[in-house]
Image (cartoon, rainbow, N blue to C red; front, side, top):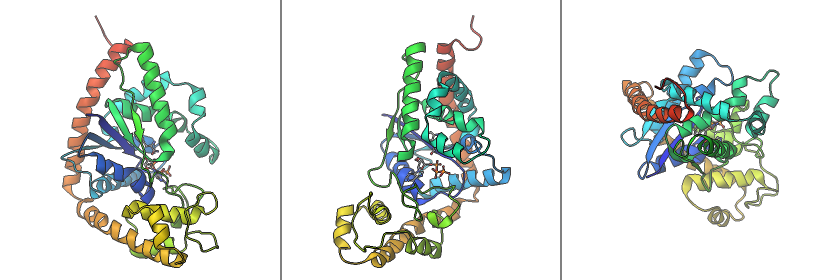
Length: 329
Ligand code: ATP
Ligand code: LTN
């Protein structure tokens, strides 16, 4: 049985892109696989933020993991910085990566473009992400489309290390992407992805948004003006995005939706989508409010960290031995 590992950064409010692209897969995989889900707080400090903001976000993401249906009896849920081996293996893999390949990462290019001085962690971050994955002998990594390049790099690093230090060092993982929902676009600019860090809050729908906010964001979502409900990413990115969000939430195919709304007009489609999203998020919000400030949540994370740490330490013994690190007679 392949092990599953994935992580989400505690960098703000989780939105429906994170949910449809990543979290939904996390839940689906836990019946058939041995799953480990991490709140990757080391990744969150690649761009500076306050201590209060970070600790708040960590617990918010943890509560959302459980609220969407991750079951701590089936899966391990923990916070990255509670397992020191992530930083340790991160360094080892930083040394196995090259500045050339890290410079080619699109996410790095985008994120560094916006800043005057670029934190080094933003550059080396994909090596830490590779460490997160390889530490648990992971076979499957459920993520959104935007992480494809990082997954490829993880595979390259695993193969490179195995070739040099022994084939038993790492399992070479594979990415897993949703057919619909893998790339949810911004509601304001449907040619760029929905993102936690977008300044405009109407560009996204967060999982904890009120019905009023959801309504406002969807009703004012950018579309073209020809009034035809048809999936066409190139020419009609706004309507295509709304159709794929609708499809991902309901399981109806985009073709079925095109037929259902043939001649109906954008207003009708948008109004129905508001209802679909509000109804889908209501049970998640209810569960979230129940557990967000509970002792149980802290207990689950502590227990998860212990279990993750035990697996990670086994991997580190093998990695250190293969690399010749540490004391040996
Ligand atoms: P930021 O925008 O601040 O970089 P983010 O919204 O991309 O953050 P991450 O924590 O980087 O959030 O991503 C968590 C998971 O959600 C990843 O698997 C990522 O691929 C997925 N994801 C993020 N945005 C989208 C999106 N718009 N559509 C589908 N999946 C997404
Ligand atoms: N880079 C990812 C978050 C992440 C991750 C991971 C995902 C960090 N470590 C390990 C899967 C597996 C992102 O979404 N920005």
